[in-house]
Image (cartoon, rainbow, N blue to C red; front, side, top):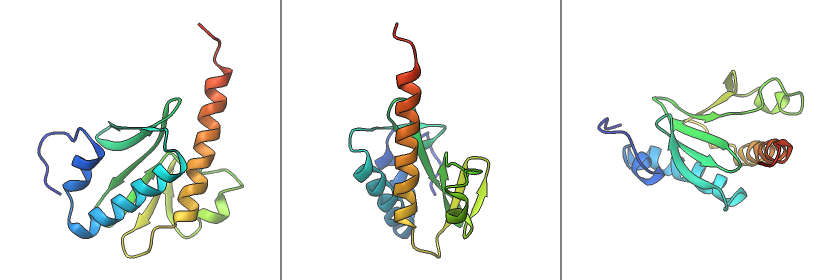
Length: 126
């Protein structure tokens, strides 16, 4: 990765990596976009972010994996699906030497959309 100024778009972020990593990042982006085409693409914490009723999901490339945030770790519905991956508090790592688990990414994004919509609906009107 070429480290210069902070990225201002998903395209700029992705362009900083090798072609192989760019392909994986683009696949991640397109998968998320297929679930929530109405989400805004932005950069938060120097990572590509999708925003819908608040921050929805982030993704980032590292030396050996793609990090994906936030994920429902500790949620019994998801725990069996996460067994093959390294997880942390609210994060999961998808190694470069394995195909992206697109079905799992879609499930996580749908979960986050429902959570963000519920949170937005619970806020009192101003």
